Structures are given as C-alpha cells and as structure tokens.
Image (cartoon, rainbow, N blue to C red):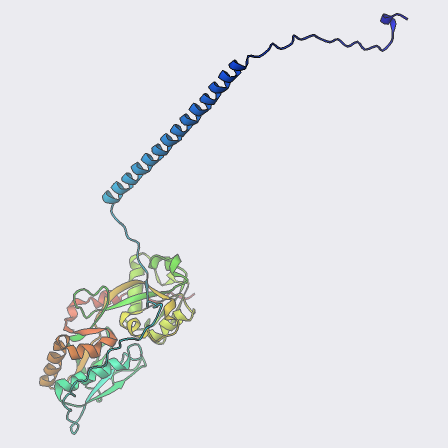
Length: 373
C-alpha cells in the first residue's frame, strides 16, 4: 500500500531552529557587573527611602507630641475624684526607735469631798469612751472639782434628769434642762481648713465596688447602711439632701438598712452586708485601726459639715464654773500636753462657735425613707 493510503497514520513534523551563536564572555561579564551595580543602587535607594520614612514618622510623632502639650496647656485640667483608702496598709511593720512616753508631773488633785460634776455623753460607742475620759480630766483641771463620767449608748434615751451637769449630745440634739456651751471639738479632716468645729460625714464603699463608681450618683441600686435615720439631723440627712439636689429620692438605693450605731454601719460594709454606708468622719478616724476588714474599704466622698457636737451645761450650774470650763477648753489648742492626750482621737483642740453658722432647718427638711406600697 502506498504511504498516503495507510490508515491511522500519524505524521510528526519537526521544525528546525537555528543553533545559538557563540556568546562573548566579555559581554556577559559586563552585563553581570551592570546587574550587580543596579542591585547595589536599588538597595541603597531602598535604605534611603526607609530612612526617610523613619524620619517622617519621627517628625509626625514630634508634631503630635507638641500638639498634645499645647492642648494640655490650653484645655482646663479636670481631675477625677480620688477614692481614699480608709487606712493605708503598710507593707512592713517595724517597731523600732519607739519613743518612751513622757513623764509629766501629775495635775493637782481635784476636791473629792464635795459633790462631783456629772458628765454624761451620748456619743458612745460611735466615739470612744477614752475621748471623754480625757475631757473629764480637762474639766477637773478647769474647775478643781471631781468629774464623774456617765455614758448612754441607747439613741432613744434622754439626758438623765436631775443627775447630769454637763451633757455631750449628737449633732442637732437639745437638752431642755441645759444651756449651750458655745465651745466644741475641732476634729481633723481633709476639708477642715479653718479650724472649724463642724462635723463632716464620709461615704464609705467596699473596695471591690470602688473600681465601678466615681461618685455618689454611681451608687444607684446598691445596698446602703444608715446609722441615724431616725434623727432629725445626721449623716443620713446629709446624704439624702445631696441626692435631692441631684433630683433623686430615698428610692435611689436598692435597699437601706438601719444600723444600731455608726460603728455598726462601718462593720456592715466590711462584712459585705451592704456595699455603702455614710457616717461621721471622727468615727472612722478612730475605729479604722481596730475593726476587722477595714483595709477593704474606701472613702468615696465627704459631705457636710454637720453642726458641732453640742456641749450642754445644766441651767443650775453657776456662771463662774461655766466660764472657767469655757476659757480652759479654748486654751487647750496651745497646750502641748493636752494636745498629745487628745491626738489619738483626732481632736485638734476646741473653738467657739454660734448656732447661726449652721442652717439646721435646711438639713432636717428632707425625707430619708421611701414610702412602701
């Protein structure tokens, strides 16, 4: 058979390509050198570009920093409220170089034969009995008479009739058988800048709640302990006056619990029964070193001041003795010995005041309880 008539025959055609010419090695070397130079130049350009970009970024950072400084200088500085620990927890306690207590000559012995002066206090246990023991000693030095100290811890009891000669009462309280001695304690407080006898109240929160609150208005729905809700004037009325000024009422808190005393209110926060309480600052300053759990508490804010703790003298006490007590107490701030005795209770001395300085009606005219339906 002929080739053209063979079945299924595959024909393959091959193209002829020209053979490569002989390459000149010198030209290859020149091209290689040029390529290497181009790589070096390209790398150098890239490095210069990177340095330029870095410098550009640095300039941008400097511009932003200068702009920020300018804004800080022009814009008003708004400080966030600081929460103050009730007590700073020291990392290490080193009782070294402890000073030996001074030995002072004893004060003249008071007259123990005649009728003593009866001093009654209604501020215990919120304030320590030791404070009034020092005050009784000062009254003995002023009058030359022996002083018998009584304390009444029940809030609903009146001053003992025909028994007490001097009575120290909670802020805003009165004694119908007594006259006001216009002198009272001056307690240490960060807001007391002018040696005032007014009493400030502190809002205390648990440390685990402190990161979530910046001010009193962040306490909505929390449980609150109130130590003196039944009193017409007190820390509770200060708190609810503040809430009223913000357009809130007693239903602001999720629940309010009555505390038997201000110390009890502090214990309720430390014991996680409530998240917040309000109490008078002198109470915190003394009991913060003795109550368990106080390290877990912070002071969120301070309100006040309340009127001073009234020192009342019996209407039958002679004017001469009353004046001796008044003058002696006013001089205590200049007596180093007495200041050392009062210092553990955060008392800086005594000062004179008038009732007109404190608007009692404004404080007492606020509701402290929400109606129950």
